[in-house]
Amino acid sequence: MATSMDVSASPPSRFVVGAATLTRGLDSTIGALVTGCLIAMIGIVGAGVFDRYILHSSLAWSEEVSIWLFLCIIFLGLPLSVSREVGLSLGGLSTRLGGVPLAVLKVVNDAIVAYVLVLLAMGAWDVAGLIGGVTPVLGLPSWIPYSVLVANALATLVFVALKVDAHGRISPLPLVAIAVAVLAWAVFHRFELVILPDVSPSLVAFIAFLVSLILGVPVAFAMLFGVFLARLVGAPIPEAGIVQQLAAGASKFLLLAIPFFLTAGTLMNIGGLATQIINFAATLVGHIRGGLGQVVVATATMFAGISGSSISEAAVAAKLFTPDLVRNGYPRETACAMIAAASVIPNIIPPSIALLLLASSANLSVGDLWMAGVLPGLALSLSLMLAIYVMARIYGYGGKPERAPLAKIARTGLKAAPILLLMVIILGGIRFGIVTPTESGVLAVLYALFLGLFVYRAYDFRTLRDGLSRSAVETALVGLLIGASAPFAFIFIAERVPQEIVAFVSGIVGSKFMMLLLVNLALLFFGMILDIGVAILILTPMLMPLALQFGVDPIHFGIIVAVNLMLGGLTPPVGMLVYVTSSVTNTPADGIFRAMGPTLLAMLGALTLISALPWLSLGLIR
Image 1 (cartoon, rainbow, N blue to C red):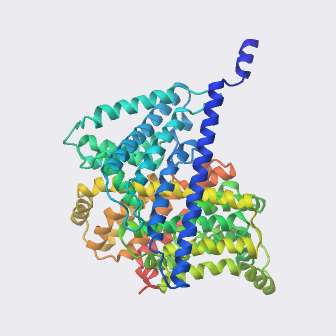
Image 2: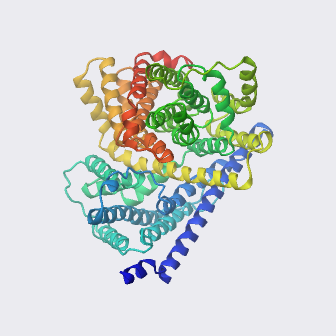
Image 3: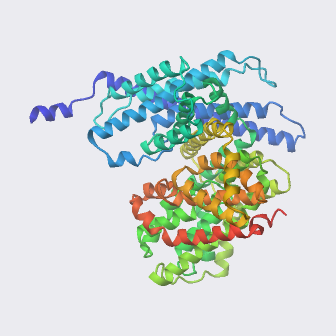
C-alpha cells in the first residue's frame, strides 16, 4: 500500500515536464500571434475607414492584408483548438463511457483529428509548391498563407502527441493514433486508391460527419474528415483543392465583420458595460409579472444590437442573472432555460453573425437581411416575455415588483444611451449605405474601446488583453468552421444535391404553404443535430433554390432558416446554448432541456408567425 502511494505521489518525469513546458510555450506563443493578428486587423481596417471617410482617399492594400491576417488567425487556431480544448464538439458519448471503451474512443478521436491534420499539411504543402505569382497589391508570394497552415497543422500534431492524462502522464495512445493516421494517408491518398466507386460521395461525407460528431470530434475536423473520406469513393476534389477551397471559403472581406462584432460584444461585456443595459432594462420591464425574467429578455434584445453572438450572450447572462433569478423564486433549471432561450435573439436582431453567415453562403445583401431580422427578433422577444408572464402567474415566479419612477427610467436610460447608440450607428450606417458591414464592425470595436477607456473607464490592461485574446480564439474557431464548410458544401453541389431536393419536394407538395411546413420541420430536425453555423453554411445553399422555385422571397426565407436553426440551440442532442448555460451555472443540461418546454413552445409560435407573415421580415426593407 505504501509503495502504491509513493508511486502515485512521485513527481512527473523529466520528459513529462519538458513536454509540458514545450506545449505551454507553443500555446502562449500561438495565442499571442492570434491576438496580434486580430489587433492588426482592427488597426488596418480602422485606418482604411479613416482614410476613406476623413481623408477621402483609399488604402488599396488594407483589404488584401486584412484577409491574409484573417486566414492566419484561422490557421493559427488549429493548435489552440486542441491545446485549449475549445473546439466546438458534442462530446456526449465520452461522458457515458469509462475504462477501455473510453480509451478506445479517445484513440479513434485522436486518429480522426490527426488524419485531417496530416491531409491538411500535405494538401497545403502541395498548394504552396504549385501556386505561383504574387498578390496583386502587395506583391508578396501567394504561397505564404499555405505555409502557415503547414506549420500549424504540424504544431497541432505535437499537441495531440503530447497530451497529458488525468494522472499527469503522457500516454502512448495518441502516438498510436497519429501513426494510424499517417499510415491511412500513405495507403489511400498517396496511392490515390478509390474504394466503393459506386457509392455517393455526398452520402459518405454526411455519414462520416455525423458519426465523427457523435464520437466527439470537433465540428470543423468532422466536416473535413467527411470531405477527405468522400475522396475515397471518387469525390472530384484533390487534397490541394480541399485546402484551396478552405482558404477561399474564408477569404471574403465581408466575413471580417464576424471577428469585429465578436470583439465588440466581448469589449462591452468585460468592462461591465452591459450592466448599464441591465439597469435600464430593469427600470423598463422589471415591474411586469415575472420581474427579473422579463429583464433577461429585454437585456438580450437590447444587447442584440451590439454583439450578434448568441453564445457570448448566453455565457454572460447565465453568469449575471442566474443567482438573482434563483433568489427570486425561479428554479435553477427554469432560469437557465429562459436565459438560453433569450440568447437566440442576438442572432436574429442585427448585427447578427448567423445572418452574416447566411448572406455569405446564399449571396444575399447583408443590409437587407439585417433589417429583415429586426421585427422577427422583436416577435421572438415578445413571445418569450409572454411565456414568462404566464409562467409567473401560474407558479408565482418573481413576486410583484413595483414600477420604476420616471426619473429613474430617464437616469438609467441616459447612462445606457452611449452603449445603445452603437446599434443606431451600425443599423443606420448599413441601411443608408454609408458603411459596409465590415466597416461597421470595426467602428463598433473602436466605439466600444472608446466607451470602456474614456466614458465608463472600465478597462485595465489585463482585462483588455484577456478580452482581445478570447475574441481572437473565438474568431479562429468560427473562421475554421466557415473555411471547412466550403469543401464540405462543394461535395453536395458537385452531385447536384440541391437540384435533387427541389425535384423531390416539388413532386410531393403542390403549394408554398406545404413547402414551408416541410422545410420548417426539416430545419428544426437538422438544428437538433448540427452546430448552428455549420447548419447555415451547409443547408442554405441546398434549400434556397427550393424557396425560389416556390416563389418565396429569399430574404424572408433566410430569416426562416436562421430562426429555425437558432432554435436548434435549445434542443437536444446538440443544444449549444443549453450546454453553455449549463457549464457556466453548473446545472445539469438534461434538467434545462426538460424545463425548456414553455419557452420553446412560445418561440415556435413566433416562428409560425414569421413563416406565415412575410411582411414581418420584409416590412422594413420593401
